[in-house]
Length: 212
Image (cartoon, rainbow, N blue to C red; front, side, top):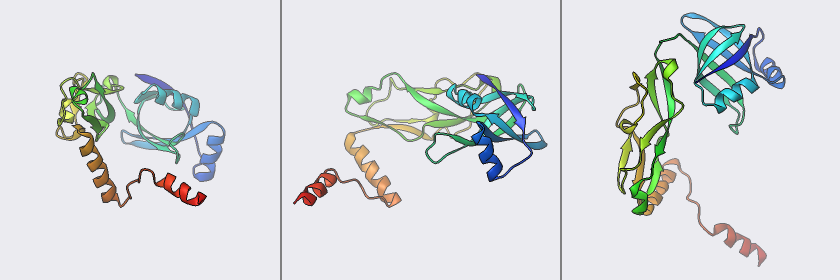
């Protein structure tokens, strides 16, 4: 899927200039690649938001720049609501690019009926593909996932024709684990990060104490 961004070259860069652009409904961006000079651009927020909502990875450029570009990197605000800056990589028709694509489950996992919980470890994989064949999403088949099973990147079922999986095929995407095992994994993860596990009922106890 390809969307169009009508871009405008910008001469002024820096924090103040970028803030003024955002106030005008424009997003600062930079276009680079193909051994050509980098170009600072301004992109209409409305067009960029539509592009992201549609899940497009490649855009057609109109205005001061022409051609196609890959949405290479996006810088979001603290709350992940607004794009503060966009990196655009020039691409040509037929050229192979490496992109990260989200992975979703398809179907129902027997492991859930067996008492298991589906625990996602990684939600995306990288593939090498031509811009015209970049998919919006990739999928794994859950119909054969039982309690105790592990699903890796090699299980992706719908790679586009000619695409190559760049992510290590043995990389774990999800596990189907027993609830107790899931709790142990969360506890271990909290210990590794130094975070204290949340104590159920602690808030209520504190509130009762304050009332006494």
